[in-house]
Each structure stands twice: as C-alpha cells, then as structure tokens.
Length: 238
Ligand code: NAD
Image 1 (cartoon, protein in one colour):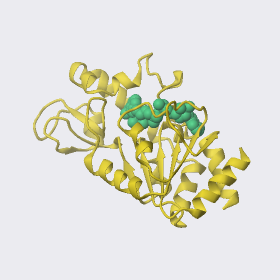
Image 2 (image 1 turned 45 degrees about the vertical axis):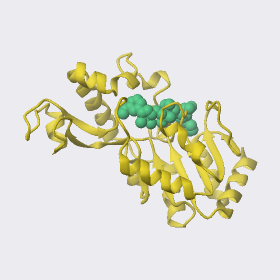
Image 3 (image 1 turned 120 degrees about the vertical axis):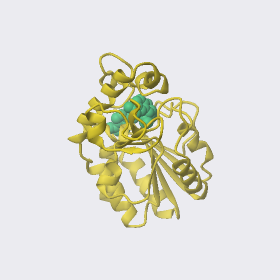
Image 4 (image 1 turned 30 degrees about the horizontal axis):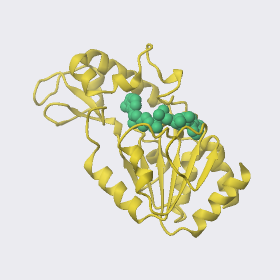
C-alpha cells in the first residue's frame, strides 16, 4: 500500500485542481455504519428502503423514528484523523473541493471549507410539504409543522426518489470538470447519480476503498485500505 500512497502524493503534488468525492466509508471509522454491511441495518430493515419518499409517505412514524435514531447516534460522533487531514490538505492548497454523499457534516466539523453535500445534511430540518425550516426540537418532539400544521418535519437529506440539491450538484460538476485529479474515498459507487461523477472526470482518478467493489470503472490508481490509514500515510509523505 505504501508505494501506492506515494504515487497518490506525487499525483497530488503535480495536480492543479484536486477534487475529493467521499461516501459512507469515510465515516465508518467515526463509528457511523455504512449502508451495505449488517451494521447498517436498523431493526433488520435496509436503510436504503427507509430513507425513501415511499417510506415517508406510507409510514411517517417509522421514517421519523429511523431518522431520530440516526440523529441520536450522530450527536456523539466526531471527525476522525482522516477528516482533519483532508481539511489540512485544503488549507495547504492541495485540495480544492470535497463533494460528499455523507449527511453527517463531519467534513465541516473537521474544518473543510469547500464542501458540497450531494445528499443534503441530517442536522437541519424543514417541512416536507411547505418547505419552511424547522428546529431540531420540533422534529424530536414529533410536532407538526408550525407553518402549515402538517405532520411532515424531516431532516434536509436527499431521500431515495428525490433529486439531488441543485446547487451542490452543479458546483460539484463545475469542480469535477475543471479538476485534473479526482480522489474517490469510501463509496461503493452503487447509488445514482453520484456514481456517475467519476465518469465525468477528465484528469487522473484515484479510488480508495477497503474493498474493491466498484465494478465497471477505470481508475488510474486503486488503493485498497481504510480511509483513515491511507490518509495518515499520505500526511506522513506530504
Ligand atoms: P455504501 O455503504 O454503499 O459504500 C461504502 C463503501 O465504503 C463500501 O464499499 C465499503 O467497503 C467502504 N468502506 C467502509 N468503511 C471503509 C473505510 N474505513 N475505509 C475505506 N472504505 C470503507 O455508501 P455510499 O457509497 O456512500 O452510498 C450510499 C449512499 O446512499 C449514502 O451516501 C447515502 O447518501 C445514501 N443513503 C442514505 C441513507 C440515509 O439514512 N440518509 C440511508 C441509505 C443510503
């Protein structure tokens, strides 16, 4: 792995515009389970089914409870060293932007500045029906929307069946199209449309993941390993 991390360091030092794309595997070492493993299940239900417009519309109490549980878990979670290293590399001018599928806000908490949240964030709330913002307590107390009175408060995440936030998507595409290096970390690349992003990259591409799952992609460099360890090794070299 060390030689490959050295190769990554060389690519980063040669590049002018580096974009990082992260997925759930970036957060697992902060003790937030990803969505594929059995730890990602909640009451034996697949989070990919729960985090959907269908569940919201057909079973709001289950939807609400699922997110309230996830939020409680997240309250105690902190960025790990890998998140901080990405923020430091941005500070040094070696990374220009991070696009993330994660709704945890851990990149922000670690100090990264240019972060595009492609699936929204779980820490702010609104009404599904009238779109007015809501306070976290209103969601946790299971209150109806204080503006339209409907039982539809929800976190600002993108559910399966919804479009991605336009600004986050457009900004990400602008960054990726001008990048000469895209580093993809901790994502199975199974969820559309984010899994199309590496195909738009015109420069070099790197894939860092603990299992080499992403089939049908060509990356110039593949590093099989844990995100935190790879980034710690990178930090030693830079
Ligand atoms: P994923 O779970 O599909 O893939 C995570 C990948 O990271 C896996 O390939 C895994 O092997 C790898 N990985 C795990 N730990 C790692 C580590 N420490 N280091 C390196 N690699 C590691 O997650 P994804 O690709 O991000 O796609 C799923 C997306 O679906 C999510 O980003 C999310 O936005 C969405 N989703 C959201 C919810 C929700 O509650 N809002 C629920 C389900 C899915």
